[in-house]
Length: 447
Image (cartoon, rainbow, N blue to C red; front, side, top):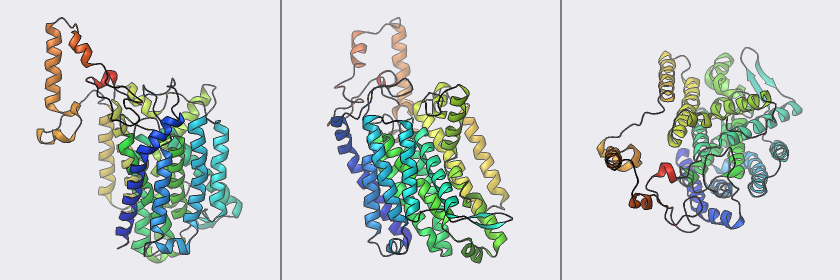
């Protein structure tokens, strides 16, 4: 089954990314790719960047292995899209590495993003037509397809880059988006026998592996950040998959499987219009991008001027912890991405609509309970952080009661326990383990 080969590609990509992130972290420390703490940053200690280096080599490993597998070899023989993706990814990755080290100008990065998108267009990864409901297939001229492709790539890259503000946020949200893209593209390719959807399926599997391999190093408190070399890279791959499945799949082949032009257009509508699919898959980052541009322009600032008004910053301001803010963003991303894919499969089901509405209500409740700390069952305490354990809460309560007996004054022993041990870069040395703090809320690193 082809799904086994996709699973193999995912595991190899994740393994290569995970194993290389540690050495890349040491290299980033030696190279000095650790900028000072800025006013808009959430983390408290300088943390190395350049995590995108490991992610890029994970991409290369995934493509190399896929080229030697029986069912996926045809993707490279019948299409030039994998080579187009690798060319554009190499260019955008190089620009990101330079930015992580030297902080290049925002306009230069924007120009590099457009050039990378143009490189992919020149090698065939472009939008050829748009299926419009009620009208049918609208063929695009070369210039129209090029402009639309470049616009989608630039929007997606910057949306992912804007949301990269908390530990594990961008990698997790892109992983969720790529999983939804994989489900839809795989259904079109293997379920309906349309070979043109095979490259998008491969891109989604590799992107999932890249994000899953990097997340263990990037979860709070992060040991390394992906930087622009990683955020722009995964944004470009996400856009490339969306462009491939929307602009390359022939609607004429779709209508043969869906029973007619009208049914095919209706089935393709939720995720098959190039202007909408990337935006539904990454709706939360895109909303953050639009709000940031409007907010900065309204205040008389440049749209590229960084601030602390992003959605994840607002979640922290209303009282959510770092981890919970990330999980809430995960929840809404998964609801919109998988809800859109589910609707494209069962668009006439009332139960599907009711389920999406019910989950949306759950998400709103989570947003309104920033101070609520859930407690897990005792049998599951070994698998969750200490702050969610009942025993941990009891110990904290006992510690607080002891402080009350002493009039709230800290003893020398208490002060010594709160002193970090072997402090290094972001709570860790270049080659050793992280430092441990007795009170992570006061001494821990957060982004």
